Image 1 (tube, rainbow, N blue to C red):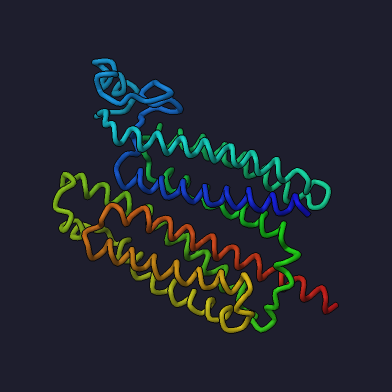
Image 2: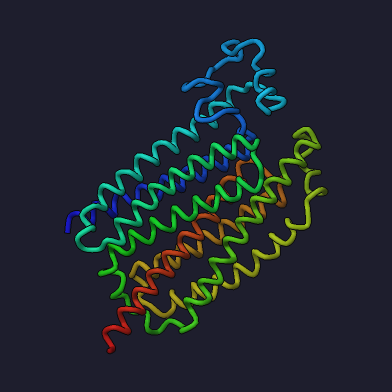
Length: 325
């Protein structure tokens, strides 16, 4: 039916847009532009931020200090980096609205798809409000982590609704040869990925503090100050690699190599290898700023791919049990 393919297209576009926003958010964080706009939803009390400090009131620093933002200093690059991040967020809001509109025909065939799409719409609104709270808290680490988790929830719900809209194709994939423990171990793997992402956000906060201590210089010495959680994070990646290697081997070796699940397994393998490579790059090459947002994006893509595989295998197993009855 045309409305199914239309929904799949707009939903997939929205997922890629959310991932792009995660990447841009990582750039904002790595570049120190998180407070480039010290107010929300405006930026320096304007809907379009200034390009030069001379466009601001002469006492703007005191004005923002009175609002609780000490040491506010206009930086055109950081301000526009954060502003573009916000604009992308607004565009995603419109894409989510289109997703809801395109989900309307499912109200007659599968109401769950429509109501979950509607829930995602409200969740994006909550995410926007949470972004304002993050700015208002002067980038409180706990809120940044929650902000990231909500983004992953949005992605997961979109992946679920799109997969559900295509379940007629997904459920016919033969996964009978896959190990019976597969779904349980995949759940464990997804949990480990989330833990790894949360630890990563905490390390990011520690790196910001270390950078301030060194006045953003002597990057080669920052590793001397790394907290214990960094070493836990690094060691934990080996456990994640081994767990996902087992999952990937089960899919690649026991299902049709041409089906979407096999391709998803290959994608997962590539994402994990590249994520580990970027992690090693940060560890060995004094935390290059460009590697940080890429590392975060890869971790988010790993979680999304794992979730898709879990849902697809679940549909296949359910269909196989139904047919056998």
